Each structure stands twice: as C-alpha cells, then as structure tokens.
Image 1 (cartoon, rainbow, N blue to C red):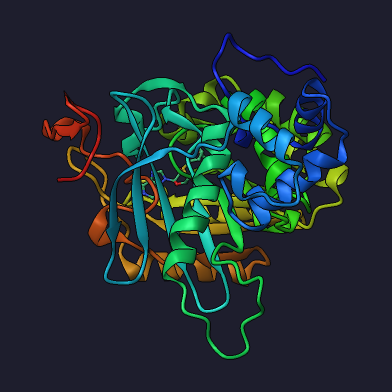
Image 2: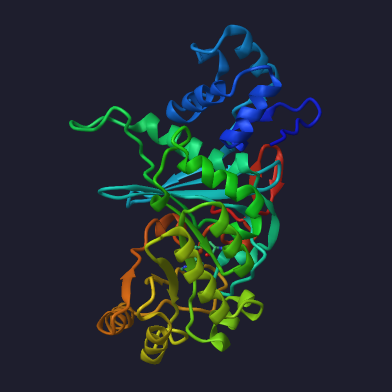
Amino acid sequence: MSVEIAGRERVNLLGLERAGLEAFVGTLGSKPFRARQLMQWMYGRGESRFEAMTDLARDFRVLLAGRAQIRPPEIVTAQRSSDGTRKWLLRADSVQAIEMVYIPEESRGTLCISSQVGCALDCSFCSTAQQGFNRNLTTAEIVGQVWLAERELAREYVPAPGDSPGHRAITNVVLMGMGEPLANFRNVVPALRIFTDDFGFDISRRRVTLSTSGLVPQIYKLAEEVNVALAVSLHAPTDELRSTLVPINRKHPIAELLEACWHYIDEQNGRSVTFEYVMLDGVNDQPEHARALVRLLRGRPAKLNLIPFNPFPGTLYRRSSTAAILRFRDELLSQGVLATIRRTRGEDIDAACGQLAGRVNDRTTVRLGNKLIGVAVQS
Ligand code: SAH
C-alpha cells in the first residue's frame, strides 16, 4: 500500500488503517510494529501528542511531529438533551459543518456518525436531503468523530464500582448520521476497519452498523471488504411507493436490493439485515403495507426497525400515531417477522433520526470562525 504525502502537509494518522500506518512508518525508516504501538496510544489511550508516547524512541517522535498529526474535527457547538443524548456540531472546513450524536443507554453507548457533508440521495422525508450534497468526508474525519467523542465522554466519566479499567463510553458505532456511507465507499471502508481492529477501537463487528438507502452494487462490494452489520432503509414494501420516498429505488428496485442483502448475509455469515422503516401517517403505515412486508421478509434473515417519523420544518409528512405503530408492529410479529420500534431520542435538540443538520430552510445562520454561513444548524 502506498502512502501519499501531499506537499508539506502533515499526514493525519486518523486516516490510516493499520496497513497504511505500517507503510507510513516505513517511509520514516521504522518497523511495522511501531504502527501498532502508535495505534495503542491513539486509540487505546486517546493520546494525540507524540511527545507523550514515551515508549517510542525520541528521534522517531520528533520525526513524527514534523511529518504527521493526530487531528480530529473541531467542535463548533455541543448540546445535551434532557434524556442524556448528546449532539456535537463539527467543523468540516471553514464554512461547512457535520453532526454526530451520542445515545447513552443502560447497557451500551451508541455513537451515530456522519459520512458526508449533506447527502445527494434526496429522500423526501429526511431533512439532510434538503441541504443537498457538499462533499465526502475523509477517512480521518470519519474516524476522528469516534476519537473525539470518546475523548469528550472520557473527560466527564466518573468510574462506578465494578467498572473495568479500560471503560469506554462508546460500545457501538452506527453510520446513520448525515450522508450515504456507500456513496463514500473509498473513505468509509478503511474507517470501518479502524473501528473493528483490535489495535484500533476494537469494537466487535456486530456493534458497528452501516446504514444504506440501497446502493446495490456497493452492497456487493462491501461484502468483499468488511463484515460489519448492515442496515437498509426500506421504508416501503412496493416499488411504486418506495420510489416516491427513496428515489434511488428507481435505479435499484426492491427485488434487486433484497437479493444484495441476502448475498451480504451469506458472505458474512451474518445474522440478519435490519430494515429501517420510517412510520409516516397515512403513507406507509396501513395494515396492507405490513402484509406486503411479510410477503417480502418472512423466512428471511431480516428484522424490521420501525422509526417514528421525526418532523422538521417544511415537511409535509406527519408521524404515525402510537396506536398505528403498535398495530403495525403486532401485525408483523403475528405473521412471523421480527419487528421492533426505535425509541426516539434527543428530540429536544433535533438529534433524532433524519433531523441532523436540519433547518436549512429557516435561514438560520451561524458564525464559524469569522465567517457567517448558512448551513444547517440549530439556533
Ligand atoms: N443514508 C443512510 C443513513 C442515514 S439516515 C440511509 O439512508 O440509510 C438513518 C436512518 O434515518 C435511515 O433509515 C433514514 O431513512 C432515517 N430517517 C431519515 N429521515 C428521517 C426522519 N425524518 N424521521 C425518521 N427517520 C428518518
């Protein structure tokens, strides 16, 4: 693997998976095991200062400081919901921002990260879509989100009796923030490897979930590269309806998408695909939709995750009533399809699914550095 060093710019080591880091330390005249030592400092201990990495030779540390850096995205704002959910707005560059969300639960802590600035897919019920597509995040920016959140959360951590010394606030990572991860395949795959590498964040592959709107060729490619958990935004049981909600369906219809999903599970020896299904009042929440889903999914390695719609300014959709959502779930369960309802978290800070970087249309502006910008931010 070759490592490109652009001009005099210091290489951000958060962007290099293990093989890339080994190649990089090789260019500095060091042995591959130095890369693993570096990773232990970076990911095991959250260290970003080379001078603090005391088991590395002094000369090597000096060399690293001149040629490399460990630089996470910069925090613009941090918010905390009344339910404990956290949201950070991060600077993507001088004018653009992305968001990440931390969802603490009794037995786990999930970080929801972004893969792109904006999104090109134009799903009609998602506020990120309104912003359009700006650019792909780099691997360093994707990995840097987890690195940064772990550091921020570790600062506040008060050990409880019985906690293991290597306590981590983040046990699960989901690529369900802004952007379509499979449209940024090249940068996302190395990030997934760093999440699961035992010298990286060392998260079990079942606890790293990539969610896609259904880029079929990339699902086949992904099956060859990594084996993380797969979530797919289904949202409708028929092509006619799905095409109105998730326009990429016109290119990759449901039958093709499901074939790719079953292939992924076969290749990965995985348990099941999670199908996300946003509950839109009067649109896709009727008993006939549940029955059509049963025909698609019964007997398959599939479970459905029903997401109550999270509204945002300007949307014409409404959330299905609680009664309708429960009825829908029960219909699926009674016909042998596993279904759960996603608990809405962080709504008071617009951190819930589909609300990230919302409010593009409310003319909110934010001051980033000295520039006034119009990206999606909450006031
Ligand atoms: N682009 C990827 C991941 C991002 S969104 C994908 O499409 O899967 C994560 C989930 O939130 C997706 O299932 C998405 O369809 C859903 N979602 C988007 N907007 C929503 C909204 N307003 N309310 C509830 N869920 C929403």
